[in-house]
Image 1: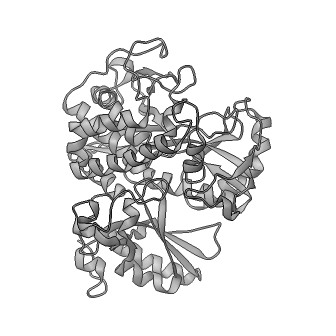
Image 2: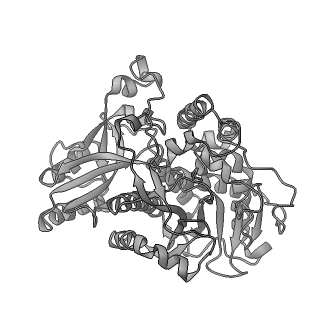
Length: 492
């Protein structure tokens, strides 16, 4: 239960903080005063994994941590163009929920344990928030809560979740931000950019040095935030790079991804650059970016790696079953790992990206790569399915639920695919529409996420895909379209 704070505060009334959060809130208030902060940003990750929020004067922040900060429920009805995808001014707001009707309020409740001072924004603090309705009831569309629920289910099964991030993105020089009124369409025209290097020299010192000056403020900012940065690398494609992070448990890895993306984009823009986590931009000669999710389970009893073992390919029985669950539910899970129209254009043979539902040990052409020798305590699975624009809470929650189903059903992953682009296997979804159909039909995900969220998410992404097919004149060509560039390039 939350510690008693100010009488009748919103947080106290509904028991929204743990004792640890209540203690952290006192430390945050002291830090705001001691560091003479002027502003504090209250933010939550929306359904797309995009940070939304309000900035308040620092003097009011301690009270607002306990009272909550209101936001309009229409934000929960927005697609990737920030257009409202439900008739919110009809009875029930299109959701058959009184709380979602009429553009009323919901409440951001700060998680004081996430407090940071932003190194790139002068005298500014930042808090990641959870969201609830004004009556204290949980918002069923809160993606951070969905991951929290998945982690709770995993704990009941005797495990904790451990994840490491390997994230590719593009970093460009911003040439034209498209601020002419003629460019302020909805969504606006994508900015014009130029390259920072020509690419094609993977992990060479020369290409890295060409981009190092641009990466330096991002690297310093990420480190100053306390994110567990492990490496900064130059990728094969022009103006493409990769940051990797040390493994973290629980919510921490997903929170890191949210803050990393936001920090990277904000720092880059302040330096005349544009960072894009869009999977495959339209500029010629660019390569697709992926998000490889490294994951394992930690046994709550004893604390050992539950995937380490001496059975097939060095995995334990638990690891094999978890792997099999990822494969069994790959089509439906793609809606979470690859949530944009654009991301499916990465699934191409012979491109170091997967194109079918297979696995192998230490092979970069498969969907799930097993890393580690027999008995290696660092043994884990690398899912290479995801795109960098994915909402990390949904991506990780989908992995947990699929893996737990594999464990519960004692699923077998089948043979290793040592020639990944010749192995006969089920193809990955060809587009977002196919992935959504698999999600809607998935009894497992409906049980795990709940019908309300699955139907909500499917409706939201269906709206996105429908706009794509209606508005993109070249939607059927298979190439990256101008619609995708305007929709995703500067959003993610």
